[in-house]
Length: 134
Image 1 (cartoon, rainbow, N blue to C red):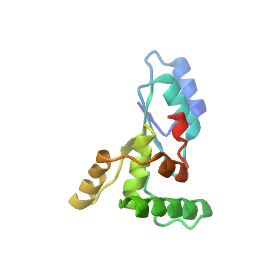
Image 2 (cartoon, rainbow, N blue to C red):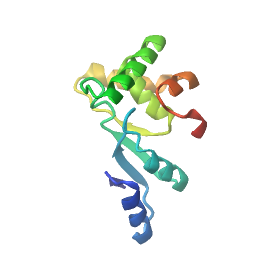
Image 3 (cartoon, helix red, strand yellow):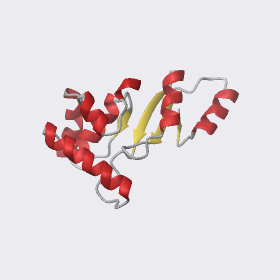
Image 4 (cartoon, one colour):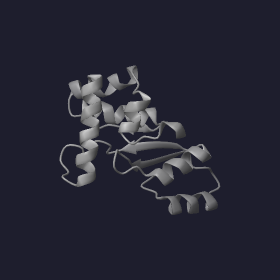
């Protein structure tokens, strides 16, 4: 597998490698969607794994992040789950693997609980996930 590869670099690797890439690990979240690499991975049977998916959700004041936080908070309020859980579940529902950072046992349990439910199509659309492409 590889990490932090954009699409041109991934294609260059694929063209030269004697072994197919099996996994790509890149930063992906509700704002930084990495759509080209995600789609390339889907089309070529490569597992895509997101890291740092929660990094800027609480602190960034950039307009895109403020809007993403607003949407995630609305979905969290509707579903009774935390914003962190909404972000992680939206990635899982998109077929993306996640690597959430956890600092305590309670947070680890909260992260694990996302495997027991799914988001509705309307919730995914509100978060900017195009469910039709899945």
